Image (cartoon, rainbow, N blue to C red):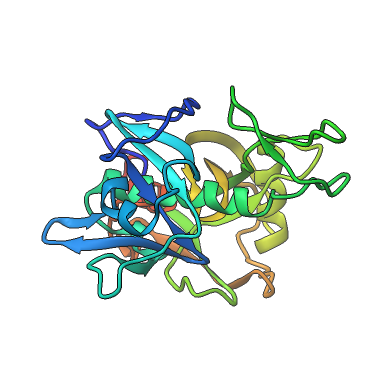
Length: 278
């Protein structure tokens, strides 16, 4: 999956140290990120490569994380060289770009960028938020409100019935490939209850034997995904929620029209079932 970057090590503890010339600068505009394409994949600019047109870049950066011994920072209001080899690319590139650790750094930085962009002012009193010096937190000096990075718990559900699994396609989304059922956890419920509720709401089926598989940080939607398999309990006839899904179908293992990809928990769960490992 996208976060599996070994032997590289991702260190997300907050260490607001000053950037150096060889530190990595992550810069975003809306749904795009600054990078250059190389023969081996993508690269992000260093502070040294940007400092000529951005004299205050070292003071106006936010520490994000470290991969191996390389520190990554968020930069803003960047002046870019005309005709530069660095270009703004859609963040969807991080699903497939190499090297994988750079793709993971890019999308994780993008998640933090969106959080900082939407937390400039206090949601309680409207005053400007300040950066804490000890942890990744924003606080309001006026009313003492504290804000931490947005992480939304959600489930991915592999509903199985013997030798077949239920797969679906989303309605009204750009992603058109087969997926598993999914949904966000609501206030006051366990993630196991989320599984049962989402399956009932989306396809009208009851399930049993709900069992946890694996989790994945999914920065594209600020989500912590938790994967579950469960067994059909009773009637297998689907009642489709057409506002959420375009279709939902049962597939035998040897008929599953999905091939392995590296990025998502959804794909891994489908392939595990297809290969008879679940």
